[in-house]
Image (tube, rainbow, N blue to C red; front, side, top):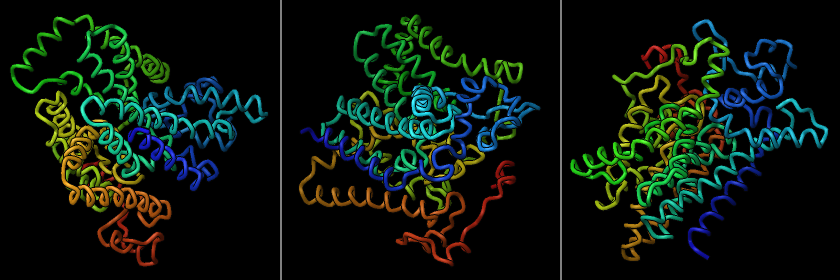
Length: 447
């Protein structure tokens, strides 16, 4: 059996065991909570209640009414998030409706069949993402390097949180889509381009951006694939102009995917374009780079240290690898954009969840790092193996800490971190070490 196949089995088995240990579907609000309510709201409002504008919300059963999250912006009441994640949920929403009808459960969008299928949707897309990631990496690295990279990308990172207790947040869906986009980019750039690939690129691109508009940055990989000098950059411009029909089809399909969102905004606000986040904004003149990467509150690399090896690995990518420049540029710009958002810690959650969307690209660097290690002598390989196993253990242990509140979702400090270090459960003293965030100040760019 190939190493990559073993990696897929271990990864999916690990996530399955953690899901059945925590059983989020049995907890109050365990699957539908926080932002997920916003993502999901499009489906029941549109297909069950026929009330896209939520004008009859006060007549809904109380347990459903509180699940419909609406935001007030410029005098309008609407769902704040875009509908990309809802589109990804939709096949499982349909299965939930069918199952509810067959089993006699309420077809209300919130009964048990809907919840189970929604939770399963995350596992389904994780499976596809893992398979596609290995398939993509194997174009450049060995089967073993690709398999180990995929395993670490899941079991040694906060992907664990977003395929278990927060499974229906947008990130695993984006993980799949961006991995698919990378595979399609490879196909377009290395084979004779055809419209099947262009159609795939356009649709997947549209969904990526519809889930999180800032993820348009993944276009950097597509347009700069194979570019490693001024000369190749000039040639890319020439080639793009020559293939303008492909570019037009790509752009048109990306926009077509957005039609449901434009339609929703038009119905609710009277305008096809609308900024639903109100006063929330980016502070590009003051990104929280140090706190966002290394801080105790939600420092990405502090809580997900394996990705430090991925970042180092970006510079270990061979010069002849067509992804080197584009991957480095993508990560530099993405990090700047992610940490310029007013809420740079991205609310509740484990580690900085916004970076999960960059993991398919970071996997290129992580695989380069692993491939380099595999070339070394045994006295290097064995310690590296121990470090890899430890990072998986540490990550899963921290997730148990987070689940037990020994790592707080947004108020960690240095003293709270060390008070909880190595402990599964919070101590009495830990609670006094936390530092709650002043969200009003943060919104004004002062925190």
